Length: 167
Image (cartoon, rainbow, N blue to C red):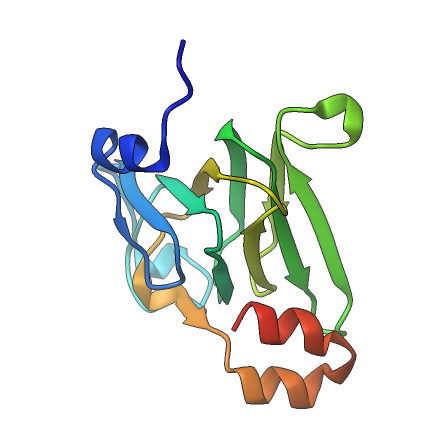
């Protein structure tokens, strides 16, 4: 099997640019809904039970820091390793490497907890990383917040390098 190019994947999966960076295509959205009254107050309306996307980061691209009102589960599929970074409310920075070399410490899966700022970049030298992202209750752009560089730098000056790279 030949290794696909990023353009092959964009065409095959009909990926489109994502506001945070990279490319995506929604591949699953539950046809059942959770009513707003059954959800925590942080949600502004009904949500699908769950959603899933393909998400592609290419060399030189990034997933800018953002946060969600739900946990997001990342699954590694194809390509080269990708670094997933989180910043918690106390300013602690964590990094996970998603990739296929599990004996070198790569993970095939990671969870990003709701409310944490997070972003991702392909590991140095990577051509592309194709991952899947699953959200429950389902993703809605109303639950998506891009990070404000100036606010984050004021709040977490020790993470300046990461914040500047991913905002």
